[in-house]
Image (spheres, rainbow, N blue to C red):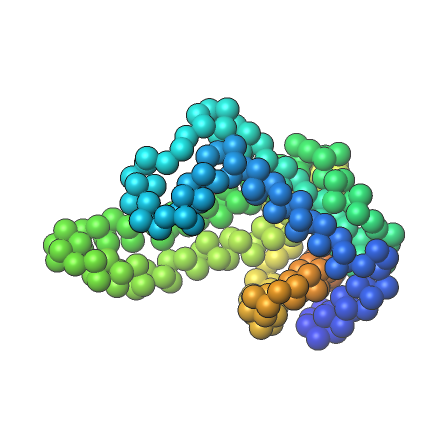
Length: 272
């Protein structure tokens, strides 16, 4: 199957125009909820007090960095993590809504909270890919950090460490490839409730074979829009535009995989 990026984006824009309520309003609500959760997380963890100290007294940076900031203990840490988890589940709800927009199905603000109906699956499908990508990142961080520290010890210069970190950047390629390999896991979990989250992650890896570079170029095509998000309110249009496009891309790679594997290959757990 030939991939037509321009056609995909045009279909995404058409789906956004046809959707009621507008994806822009749904994303506004999502942003407001996310901002509220972030503020509450900072408050219960004690980070909000440190942030206020830095805003009123920039000279307090050293005391904050060396651990004299506020600490709320285990309860504060637990509540902060709980609020972050709520954000993950809401993100799955947003994916549900965007997939419905692409498919021209009825969606509404309530879809944002649909992830709570599959609470544990929503958490797992967020954590598993992030964990696997994190493991691949060790290919860069473990050797490069060791060499950078050795370089500082030998030369006494931070510039040498920066040079090592820069030269080692190609070692991030496996991590980048892994991030693309597991990108369709959430969509697959939503479409296949009979599959485990682990199977969905493995199936995503299979589906994305031969599509990683194509997906990377799709991301690059949004670079200009992403930079424009620095302009107030532009993100309200860019966020749904990108997410609806990615929902359409999921259906494209799934159809391509199905066409190349009839009957479909049974999903396999990911190999880190």
